[in-house]
Length: 566
Image (cartoon, helix red, strand yellow):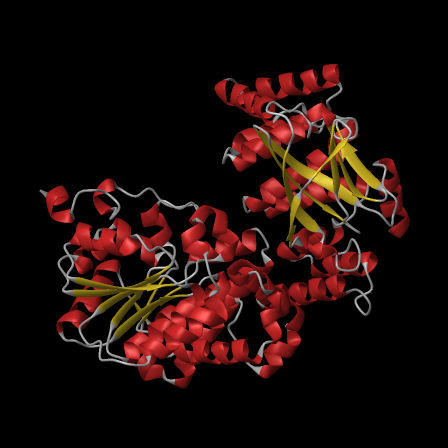
């Protein structure tokens, strides 16, 4: 296996020690953005032979597991402002490390202007997909830009055109020079669509024809595990790395063990048991519960558990030990997303906050986390973090029911999108309309006056937090500024520990720490709705793939709800 990897590296001009690849290049005016990965990363960018200053951000890349020690940290995003108003990409060169340089000669398709790639994609969408894909392959042959169809396939997939992307990538299989890349991209595409048997058929063909390239063994093994071929998955992992020496191999084996212990059928069985032990509530019933709690000045807490919260659910010391590597990786990823600080894993203060998060779940009156669709999707794409989220939210809820079955029968359960459902149905607007006092925890300063105007609210108390750091660019400078942990967290906990909030409605959009705030607010008498990314949806910030929001339900419109209803 090691010999095959070295042969592949030699074919693409890399030494086994110095490895790297440029995955994407985008040029907007004079602003350059590159994405890729490299070992021993020491970037040196030149334009027309002159050095250009760069800004670099490290990107965690789990797909690189197995390439080498610490390879999951080899990903990067590089940006620079070029010394020309209309730069010529052919004059660019990027040295990744001592053994690898990328330029227009080594990566012709990547150095093709993005506008040309998009034009090719648009042309394919405008006509017959099969004919357009065949024409693109012929064009790439005539120009010797052989990787162009693969890049167009990636662009179509990124634009949500999976069918067109598949047509282009299948046509690209006719090009022997890029067949491994095209097949891998196609395998990833069909796996993401939940078509695991097709993905495994492509994997089997790749292994028979050219073997697996660097970094492909562990993702391939998980595809085998996803369709129940666990022995083959383990054999492939052990072939790629010694679990006793290779952390990535050991983690992959852990995930295979989790998939074997909790296959999709077991997840569906747990979901059925959960629905029998909790109260499966309709959206109308949840709206009625919230309104009744407000009228009766009774505390209430609707909480949602996504994959970020799922990463931090703890079942038992034995479970923590059995799946320690998976859990540690999931948790480090989320800390990087939220705070850009994976080292918080080992901070005793943060561990105490996780204890408070655990306790917060016991305050829940409605939990949004569970659905057949989530099981089908996460198992369909064999997502390490997603499957762990599905399995552990179900196990955590069932443990809560076992500990207090009477309380569980009174807790409503819904799927994770309950916050979107409340907004799009108009239920949240009805709950908000005309309230005398509403509280809001969010990173969006302008949302408080918008809600006040739109819904005819009286007093709106805003607690401003810094937003998720992974979305800093989308959120904007003001929303992302500051440190949520520990600075604002400690201040907010002290603030919420005082006061009587009976009869007040609070909307909380603050991630995992927001669950702790929500529980504290409930203990002070408030009615709390965990709205999550609804705050970003209202503000028009593209942090997620959002549903369409009718203008009448958008508080950022200039018209109040009463006018829009009329």
